[in-house]
Image 1 (tube, rainbow, N blue to C red):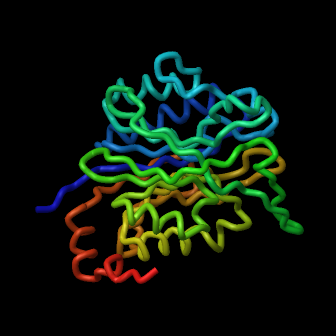
Image 2 (image 1 turned 60 degrees about the vertical axis):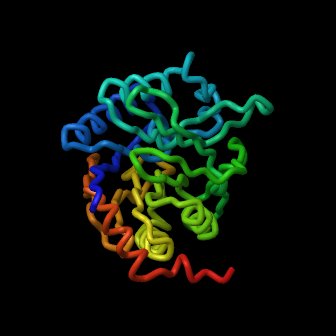
Length: 274
């Protein structure tokens, strides 16, 4: 018997005004809820895009009983709408390094409890001549743990943006039973226009999972532009839904029975030799 799970991914253009970014995020999550989504994924950096040195000052503790303003607002939102909400990228304070934080994805349940959290493992350090220059590791600490969590009757695997380029992470998530993988992202325009869809579809096909890719889009400031194209992809690599070049929501009903059939009829995960 098929099990249908309504999900949504959010796309927005965050800037340096945290309150405005949170207001937009809340509005879009509410729209996804009106469409019937039980799981909503926000993009990486939804609370703030600007100088990483300033983002350090926004870092919060991961404490649901006494949360900071970003996490607290997301907890209240998940509780009010009674949905699972993936806060795609919150700066979470490091106890050992005051000048650095963890880029953290936090899954909240319908009662506002933290179901699971994931610290971005692969940090975006690049210098493309004539293109993007970014050194995430100057202010961000890398995570060191692969995370998959049980929720909504399935297993959800977590990743963030640049992680998408490292297939071994997704293979380990599949090995742990992930049927859905989340990819909150802020892909640069320079790389996204050529690599976003090929990488997302590859991760879906090779691991036979649904991929939920929330995204930043547009021009955030004079130094940074994101590609956008937030989307939902099925285990066969088909794009089920996509947001156009604007703030918005993409919604799809995931058929977990279809996923089971794909894995049964093409059992490549069982054929692994390495």
